[in-house]
Length: 350
Image: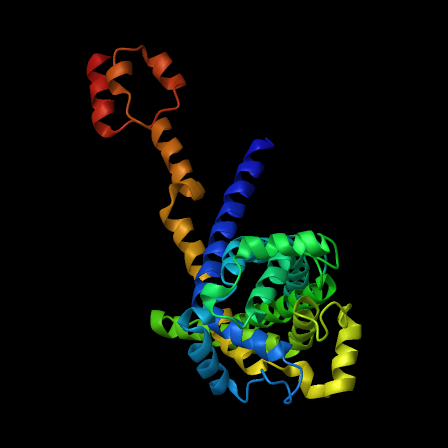
């Protein structure tokens, strides 16, 4: 009796993990250049910084001129290694938290938001070490061929600063805030608005409906959580004075940035962040939903209905050749559905 629910959970979890991982991989490959630009804006201190960019267009031109095309893909390996499990965790834990909250008397709107918060906090635990390595590589302004490899830079951090909150896990509280707030708004807005806006029968219009809601979800979540993102980049990136740690904790870093640079400094990198996570958020949700549906319909290993139908087929196969000569009493005891031809054959033998 206990085996069936376990098998069902494993199949459901497998679909969610595969679909979530696919969504993360597609999104990071498309949107990583904007993440590089966003990080560069967030770690520059002020306009007097000789390395500061004047505008979004200036940042793209400067990176391309000095670092080449591959400069936009600096630090991409940590996200690729992290995004598949990260997004798999994101969507899988969201579904599980949503299921658990179904036992509590909460409104659907609150259920989606709290499940999103829980998934974001869980996701942050998985992704933070990868973020530390990624930000450090993105902050490097040398040519792509001159920068250290991902593994050598990770080893450098571990050797110099360790694995703790001052080393490979620095900025942990800021990462918790960034992912928790983002997922709470992202999932809460998407699923609540999606349930309000009517479904369209035309496949193209339905695709655009979902993409539009996903775009708004990613945009609004980005605007709300960016102060945590700026604090994370300052803590995990290079410090103003080498050897001296200025940015340590999340809220203290926010306060320092506000006092020294003003409120707008907490929104540095907002435009490239929206350009990435607006459409990127829509891409993730659509890839997740379509991949999940495809796995459900086309992969027998994930489809309970296919397995059940096969079992039924075995139980209801015609057995007239083996039972036509049996006495009537024996045939009545067998749970078999005979065709008309089989019944005629039995009558002849009787």
